[in-house]
Structures are given as C-alpha cells and as structure tokens.
Image (tube, rainbow, N blue to C red; front, top):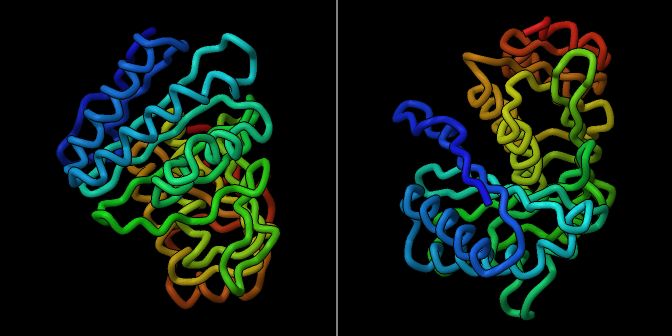
Length: 277
C-alpha cells in the first residue's frame, strides 16, 4: 500500500490538489482508502450528509473493487480531487463492464449510482475507470443515470440520446490525451463529459484533445465544460477540439470560442495544433 501525493495543494489552483492511492484488498487497505476519501471530503468542505455518502462509496470500492480490476491481484488506484463544495473520485483500472458492476454493487439503497451526484464509466487504453462526483447538495442527491456499458452513459432522461458514449486514450506518438464523445452533450450528459476529461488530468496529462467528430449536439452546459477544461489544463497545458458539425461550428463562432481554442476538422490536425508540448 502506498500513498502518493500528486502535487501540494495550491490556493489559486485547487484542481491540482490530487491525491492518489494504490491499495490492495484487505482491512488495512480499506481503512487507508476510507481515510483518504474522508480527508478529501473534509478539504472539499462537504456537509456531514455528503461526507457520509463519500464514506459509503469508499466502503463499496473497498468491498467490490478488487473483483473488477483488470488482472486479479492488481492494486486498485484511486484519485481524489477535492474542490470547494465538490469531491471527485477516479477508480481503476477495471475490466470491461467493471465500472458498471462496481456502480451497481451494494445494497439497493446504497449503491455508488445512488450515493453519487454523477458517475460515469470511462473506457481507456489499459481498462475502464469509474469517475465519480459528489456535489454539495445536502441530503438531496439526484444522480445521473449510471453507465450503460463500456464508456457509455445509459439513457434515462426524455430527449437524451440513447447512444451517448465517451472514450479516452493517450495518443502514443504525441503524448496528447484524446477524449472522444458520441451523441449529445447537454445538461444531462455534460457532467459525465466533464468527469471523463478531468480523469485524463487526474492521470497527469495536460494536453487534451476533445474529439467531437461524433457529437451531434452541444448546448450551453457543454460549452461550460469546454471552458472549464481549458482552465484546468492551462497554463501548463492546452486544449484542442476536433469538430466537423456545422451547428457546433456556428456555436463556437457566435460565442467567440473558435478564437480561444484550436478547432480543427481532423484528429491529426488537432494533435498537431497542440505541438510537442
């Protein structure tokens, strides 16, 4: 069991305050995991109710996570990112479908899907990760519907696209991390996109390409995610966008975001726009 800080807390950049823990199955590991998540919840200044939710999630990860890792006996790696009023967790690397099974595990009234504000499975190169957000909402938790499969968020809201999916993977040649989104990015799916993108930053990557090639719709909530991601990676990194949808292009032009971000028609062009870093 090892605990590795990912940079000291910075007053002007709370998003960099990431703690990572690799922990094996067992009582000692479960205790360390609970303490780490508890510390993150305290730093995020969550209410007692939200802290309790975080601790229940820690117990579920400790109880059911080891069964879902890519290779039996592999240590679970968990990242915690505490910011004011919000705690973000990232758990992996999990087998295909493991994020969904972990989300559903536990008592019917105390699953990760129920306890979290947003939870989404992120498909990566080395396996799935489960990204979780607990927002300061007191006792009222309105969770985003859980993932419907590898890298997917299942349908659960009227008007929401049924084939929404997120995949994320590093581009080996350039070192850029690519987050690809299929379907609509709206008020229901934007939190999942945000978590998937921040998961890449959790892993120490700050040159991100947001691939919208298969994105069919982007509303103001989605624009907020894009702006927030750019703020997260800068000034040390940068963000480029792949887009060929004329409606989304028009949105970028109207808002002036096409002057702020590198928007390119192909993945190769977007990667090139970020340079060698």
